[in-house]
Image 1 (cartoon, rainbow over the protein chains, first blue to last red):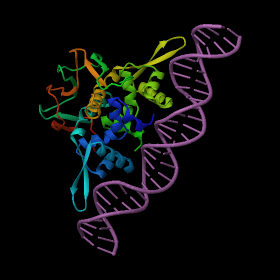
Image 2: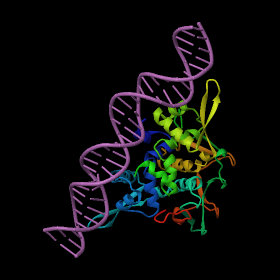
Image 3: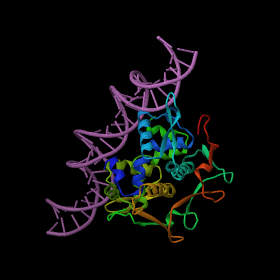
Image 4: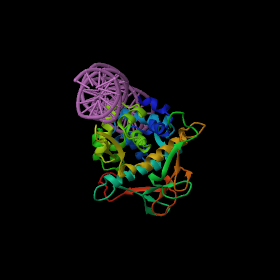
Length: 154
Length: 154
DNA sequence: CAACTAAGTCTTGAAAGTGAACTTAGTCAA
DNA sequence: TTGACTAAGTTCACTTTCAAGACTTAGTTG
């Protein structure tokens, strides 16, 4: 299967990955969450090839994950900012970061901590159920076909 | 920067992505969470090139995300099962799926629902704070250097 | 007018992915 | 005991994408 075909898949994960599933995109978004906004800053902090960065930013803008905002008229200069849709990826990114903290951090601990300003503490993310509010154990989840299911497979 | 260098980065997201960040790996894991376990089943349900599937499964086994278990002695046959470490990726995958549900599901709704067996309802995942238990708004999080931070950047 | 800046684009060789055919080790039915 | 079958890969020829650095463009500043 080609990569382009993925966005036509029924599965929500496949569609998500067709947008943010390549090797660089989540790192670009990490930088965006760390307040990086300009082309050269993305390029330097990630060491990504400029051509690839340009392609990724374009895709993210086309998909509405980032928006291009002029921050200077003359000469015209643009920066990339997260949209609401982009902010919606935060839980996924934090979950991946915390998984990395758990399994790959050295003895000293994780390189980056996240402080929850509301309560003032450094936190880990906990996946909880929108319905009962309890923490969810993966073994306590049963996937089943939803309303948008294809005949063959979800 | 080469992909192989990513695992040597300090950032937990980079290290995580060096394991599961390529175009296919999360889809392989999606199938694993849907109880797919055998090589040919992965191959057929995903339409992935066999060579790539073999490489991904090997990496995931080497990293301890999946384990290879004999399910038949004669002839020897193996299947791939999620380890505890692999189960730890569930929150991230569910978050990605729900993001896709939100932004790419058709009018009919998402193709796959997740039922929380503990309370009996279909749910969305909510990222909550491990410290105060409240739902976390991305704008209420402040990243800062942790104990394992490098001098230059996190 | 020359140097500088931000935001890209272009070029070339290396790496990774694609799809189909092939291999291997063993079972089973005739 | 030969021939078909199966699961789990491996190999091959080809295509696509990536990496690194040079180049381009439009406008500003000294």
